[in-house]
Length: 279
Image 1 (cartoon, helix red, strand yellow):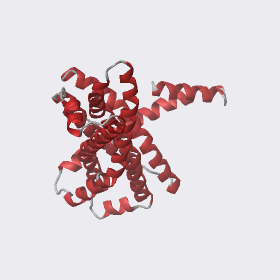
Image 2: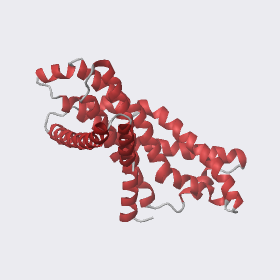
Image 3: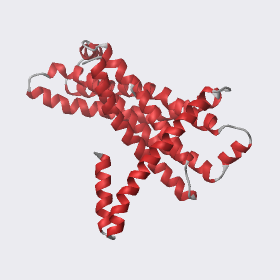
Image 4: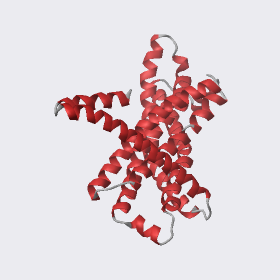
């Protein structure tokens, strides 16, 4: 659907120029899209080959885990807490109308664990981490630091790309757990301000009917989000051209593309989880 919208917009803009441009722009757009995905596929292959070959950059990996995970934790915790409060306030009024107020803890817990927590974490990390990776690698590319690494027999894919992608894959599930925890806790706080209830009772009612397929698969799917964020941001950064202006474009495109692909991947993964485990 997004691709169709862009194609239509491109075709419409072409009519404002001339007939030749009107027919050439959609064709050029298709070619550019296929070229981009082809280059991304080759980028992924080179990444895997570099990551599997020793020696391994464990120190850089730990540094990236701290950069991506620890420094993103306050933002993720705040986003999860705000989601829990809003969900508690909004859902409570709706459930009271139908006489189902007792289901509020279960609704909050299930909503956060199964969907809201993972997707919010993915989008928050896309905004913070993807922009940082794209800008950092982009500036290294335009200042020829990456060329200097290659001249020094240092594999930039192993040191720069593989560590960042793997750190994103590892840290996304942990950040999702933090988001779920803060959301559930603040959901209880918001509910308690309206009608006092113990935390133990709130958690018992919330997790009473939760199954394996309600918790583990939605949390682990964020590993796919992490791979998407890391690979897209690194890819956009490594192919930066055009000086400082190109660095800005790389940072922007990293955020936009990674966020878009996270949302699309979420649709596919939810359908896959339902097919395999059922709800």
